[in-house]
Image (cartoon, rainbow, N blue to C red; front, side):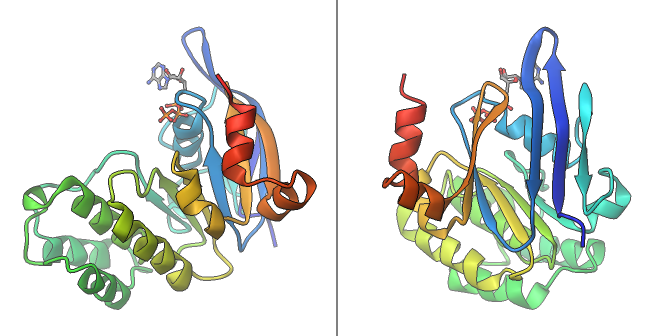
Length: 232
Ligand SMILES: Nc1ncnc2c1ncn2[C@@H]1O[C@H](COP(=O)(O)OP(=O)(O)OP(=O)(O)O)[C@@H](O)[C@H]1O
């Protein structure tokens, strides 16, 4: 079986700025991977390249051995940095839309999670708070039976009380053979659920290690290692 994600010599330039520079990476199936780095380090650029939303200056991305395109869209469930949902739609309407659009969307799972989170599915998106909208989006994305989940800052606007529920929900609902790649600044909140972390600095991968390796070899948490590596 091919790795779910391979980045080979990936480079992206915006004008004279290297947002990513010769980044190579292979991710196997069945792990939760944290993509960590300071503001402007290239996390969203990498995520957009994986989703085929921008094209690379050099190098390539392969998802299950395929270039990003119509076939890989079925395998990847993506939570973007900013909402793409129509604010005028009711949550109910969005559920139907997802059911029609994605063969692998599990509406029963989605409804159960929305109910646990006390979200009224008859509400229009624009009437919901920012954090509640984020929860809706995350529920939709995690309810697809995908092979690669890419979550760009999934819990940034969510209150701390709901974060644990959401992270737990992700853990209990996702298929064990799938891989989750998530970018976040909330390292302490998520580090217990991560199998692996990637540190990205100025467009380059400076660390690719399992959380166990960090804890045993360096005898520290991911959060304290991050603060050490990225000290201003
Ligand atoms: N559309 C664009 N045009 C020009 N420069 C861009 C564009 N998008 C990103 N950049 C630049 O590329 C670099 C990487 O940005 P990117 O958004 O990937 O970082 P990030 O790690 O996701 O940051 P954050 O944590 O703040 O979201 C930054 O220097 C940024 O200014």
